[in-house]
Amino acid sequence: MSAKTSEIKLKFLEALQTISNAEELEKIRVEYIGKKGYVTELLKEMKNLSNEEKKTFGQEVNILKNEVNDKISEKREELRLKEIELENSRMPEFDISMPPKLKRGSYHPITLVQRQCEEVFRSMGFAIEDYSEIVTDYECFEALNIPKNHPARDMQDTYYLENGQLLKSHTSAAQNAIYKKYKDALINDGKPIKAIFPGRCFRNEATDACHENTFFQMEGVMVDKNISISNLIFFMKTMLSEVFQKDIKVRLRPGFFPFVEPGFELDISCLICGGDGCPSCKHSGWLELCPCGMIHPEVLRMGGIDPEEYTGFAFGLGLTRLAMMKYGVKDIRDLNSGSLKNLAQFTDDK
Ligand code: PHE
Image 1 (spheres, rainbow, N blue to C red):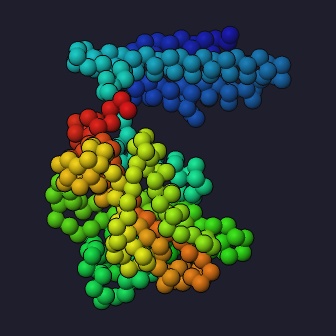
Image 2 (image 1 turned 180 degrees about the horizontal axis):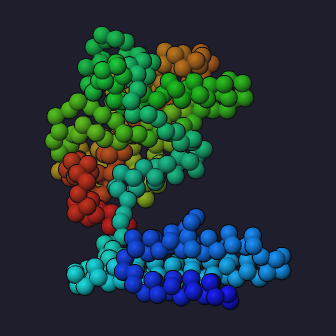
Image 3 (image 1 turned 180 degrees about the vertical axis):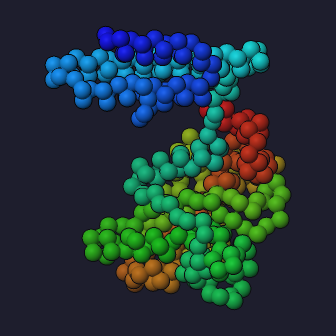
């Protein structure tokens, strides 16, 4: 090693000894192997050397450069560990290098129920669609046979944005877009439209144990030739029996929604008493779960589908409701509380 190289190396090693923090280390790095550092400068001296000398000297400088680099990395790690140690000594109870001792997280009850429903419908050939939470008046109401100023608008109040858009008050707001998306495959290739679209919905409501201004629904539609109410009952019964892991009895009562004709309220046999009657089902043996019906011809037409040729059903499953039933959540507000203490009791270790 040439005298010059070893001198620089020695000086570097000495300087390294005195380093006590990352800033000083960086200063030394620049001083030695930065653009104008001592080691880099050495290379400039090469021009005065013979070819043979250039080769050995070049190698020597490169070796030195790598050594300096390695030592700096080592030092950096050493400083990092020292810092952790220092932090630890300041707070003996708290080791910042340890993974947090929090309990493993769990999914939100609504997420769990939503995924389960999605799984069942996926296995029955339904596509799962996502849709925005901000929609137009047309999507949320007009395309669903609820014209402006129609009394049916009173059924659902929501939050309006200054630009005239609104937060969707039900997942039905995606129906029109779904029909338009899949209608060509239905009409040209005879592929039935089968889709579910879960989503967050909003209503301008006074909140109490059973009402929230933000909740989840899962809409489902099926459109093809000769779809009837029997198809609707079959799919709902299968899905609910899977979700609750037992045979669920269902019944339909008439219900009014402008976008279905006929429209129904689908009830399921009470999960607590099995249908005998108890306080949870107000002694009726039935729980109201899912409004549904045969898609109104006008709604199909607005979606670009000829109602003379095709029929379909639609349902709006209350996911929040379902989660409450499945996990025995008594107050709907617990679900949006963000309180792990409240939520973990329903889903922990499940
Ligand atoms: N969108 C309706 C509501 O939220 C429910 C519904 C969906 C009814 C589909 C019939 C068919 O009240």
